Picture 1 (cartoon, one colour):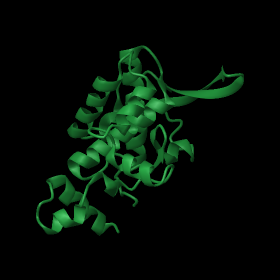
Picture 2 (cartoon, rainbow, N blue to C red):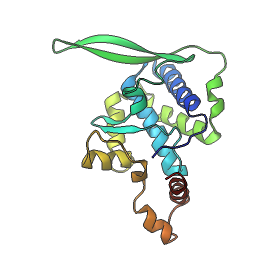
Picture 3 (spheres, one colour):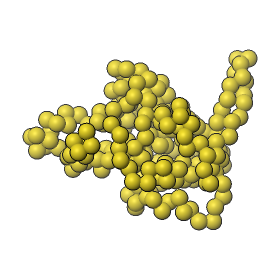
Picture 4 (spheres, helix red, strand yellow):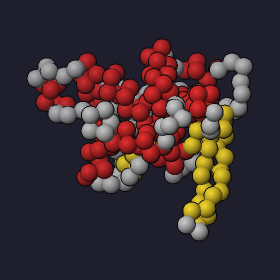
Length: 201
């Protein structure tokens, strides 16, 4: 399902710039690509779970380390803007040369890239920074958090268990959605998403 997110490109670039800048501010380290994917996925799926709409509407693949945004990982979109760039860093492991990617944010006096976000968006983004931008929190720990049965990303768990590396259906965030809606037992976010997807089917 394709979500019609107003100012989607500006919001995705703004989210990347925010997470790269704030993560560096708190940890004194550049944000790595894997950690960025986790920030974006948690932002999208937690927003969907709480409001009935994803924050960014990116398309995610259910890969082993968690949800990976296809537009960035495969299509190489959003890898450069006026606020940040992706920097490749070669390293060696077991005699093989591999590439790590850090997201480098440009210093700006005014964070105009935040103009496209609501108060709810900003609160959620800051919560994610509060929880994950710690020196002891590795990309693997963030990945493990996305896999957790209780507070993890439910749609990733369902897709990974049924079709590893498949495209994640965001509707899998909710259980028995149609049944709940027809029985008038859906939550506000479930009801909003149910109507939204019917209108955009």
